[in-house]
Amino acid sequence: MKIWPAIDLRGGKCVRLRQGDYEQETVFGDDPVAMAQSWVRQGAGQLHLVDLDGARDGTQGNRQALQAILSAVDVPCQIGGGIRDGQTIDQLLALGASRLVVGTQALKNPDWFRQMLEAYPGRLVLGIDARDGMVATDGWLQVSHTRATELAAQFGDEPLAAIVYTDIARDGMLAGPNLAAMADMKRSAAVDVIASGGVTTADDIRQLASLGLDGCILGRALYEGRLSLAEALAAAGGGNE
Image (cartoon, rainbow, N blue to C red; front, side, top):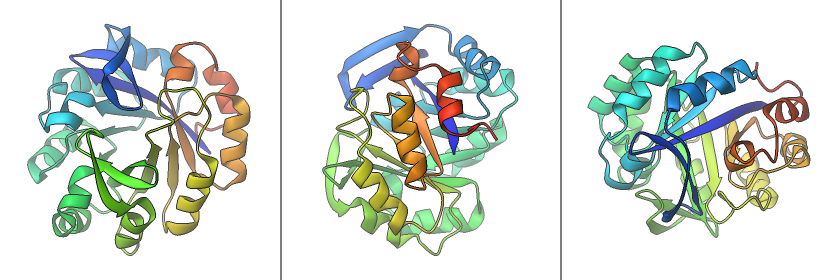
């Protein structure tokens, strides 16, 4: 199972939110490049980058920081947040992103997303963020009437790279992942599923691996020192290949 250290960007800084709440922000660093390089030195085989400003308002406010990270590290990086048109996809892939996470537009404009999947096979990840099993959009500010597993099923025959499934209620809370929801998504999906939200301990990672999850994203637990990257990689059975 792959381990994806997360670097969430807001105003060019590394931050973490609690339950996706922009009013509950903790700043963990002013230098995203140094943070990315640190995770790679510690053994990260891939990084998960999020433009929180883009996720909320659709603009690419952290483009400079993203470009600097992509230029500074030599591991695959997936980027999410505010990716809602073909031009943005072209630009971010041209910067060196290995793949991109699309969430809001996949729900609101599924025909467009299918077209993008055909144009960029294996380069786009379906980002499904859910609260109580229902898909949330626009930086988690809006909750839809679509179940997370239903959204995954809509694109079951498309050339997705993977699904990133985030349980908002657990995100940033250090309360452990929603194992039942993650197992349900894994059963429903035809592609790799990466778990996100609440992963705090090595045992959390081992449980996700036992459920067949293909990866997990780590944020606050790493930044607060509750779990080292070395411990996470060991629990995942290597996790950086």
